[in-house]
Every structure is written in C-alpha cells, then in structure tokens.
Amino acid sequence: MLVAHTIERCQMRASISRIMAGEGTCKDVLRCLFGLGEFEMVVYRGLLKTGPSRADELSPVLKRDKSTVYRALQKLVTSGLVIKQTETLKRGGHFHKYVAVPPEKIHERVKTCIDEWFSHVQEAITKFDIP
Image 1 (cartoon, rainbow, N blue to C red):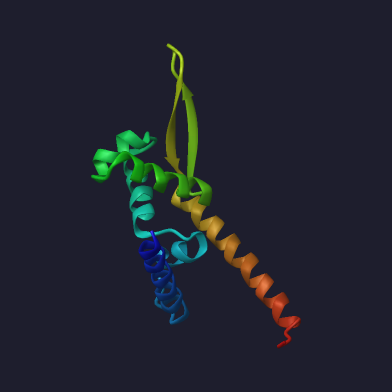
Image 2 (image 1 turned 30 degrees about the vertical axis):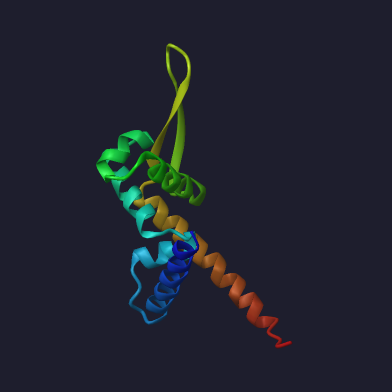
C-alpha cells in the first residue's frame, strides 16, 4: 500500500508540473483536484460507456476483480463524480447501481473548485507573511 501511495504522490506532482507548464490535461486536473488515480478514471469512463451499472457488472468489462472496482467506485462517489443509487428487489433485499455524472457537470464542478481555490489563494496572498 505504501508503494501505491508513493506512486500516486509522484503522479500528482507530475500532474501539477504539467499544469503549471501549460501542458496539463483533464486527467491531470482530476488527479489534482480529486486525488484520482488512473484506475478510477478508467472506471469512470467505463461507467460512461455502459450506463448505470453494479460493481459486479463492471468488473468483467474492466477485467478487474469486483473488490478493486468497488473501491474505485467508492472513491468516485466520495469525489462526487459518480452517484450511488440503491434499488430494492421485489423479493426483498437491495443492490447498488452506480451512475457517472455527465462530463458537462464535472466541467462545471471543476471550474467552481478552481475558482474557489483561486479566491482562497488571493486571500492568502493578501495576508502574506513569512514566519
């Protein structure tokens, strides 16, 4: 787990460098704002293609085990890029389907996040003091 966490940090640093150099991609922005890794982005794109799906339905499509897909879905839900819907079975019980938030909505959310961040940076600069 430590190796994976270190790799994610390195990827985030690389993303920040590309953004600052004016060479950033959408992937770089999502990695920086939401802490997403490559696989979470693969899962998001998979959901866009398949439509609302359960983790066990996505698993064979993405060629990964269900628990790995589930963890990625949880991270996407926490990030607000995927919506988790609970559906009740007629015979009792329930299951969860996951729906990708449309890219247009994510674009709006990213813009809002960046605008808020910029505002906070400007405020911090006005209080600039070096201890």
